[in-house]
Amino acid sequence: MLITPEGQAFAQGDIQARKTIFRKAALANVPLLRQMEQALKVKANRTLNEEFFHDLLDEHFGEEESRRQLETAIQWGRYAEIFDYDAATGKLTLTEA
Image (cartoon, rainbow, N blue to C red; front, side, top):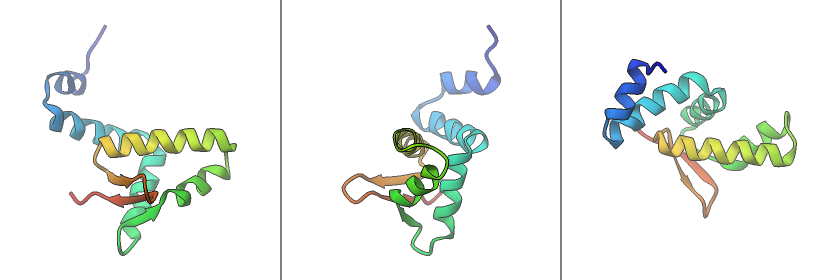
């Protein structure tokens, strides 16, 4: 088994270092997260309702798959500190770097 330098840094890093590494990898490799970040960046208040993203996914996938992908993207985006998510309102807000 080969561990990449990024994998080694992730394994040895503290939580903040791991989040930074995850964020970089997620934005480089997960088109949905890139789209979400870009959509939030263009909004003046840096906030969008989760339904905006659900509607985008719903054009290509069924209801169950759209919901599953959005839930996963929200979890990953929150962990990577790309955006904050308020479950009570369904709002995503871009995290300021």
